Length: 104
Image 1 (spheres, rainbow, N blue to C red):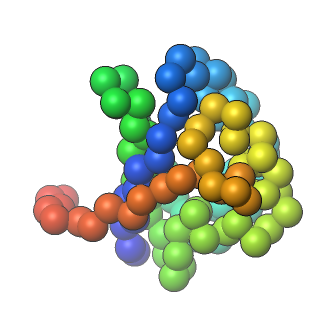
Image 2 (tube, rainbow, N blue to C red):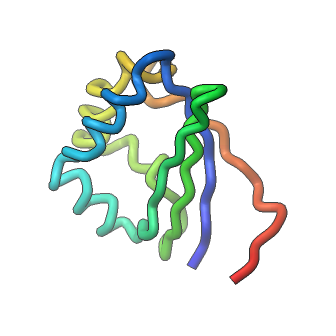
């Protein structure tokens, strides 16, 4: 099982809306993410910087950020683009984070 971590950028004042949308994540999107091998997926918010920190485990080759070629992920990205810093294709601006320490 591989672990992936990355950061994304939330627009100021959008934390409640971000949490609301994720509390109601589309079931078909959630299932597709699980089917791709992603598990133990958490997103944390640093309120001082509005940086979102995501960590997940994956039994496959990539993580959830590698599913952008699917229609449902593209729709989700478009849905979220008004509250997050996004690229021209609506994908969230994200930066992979290398692991420097891990303890079980």
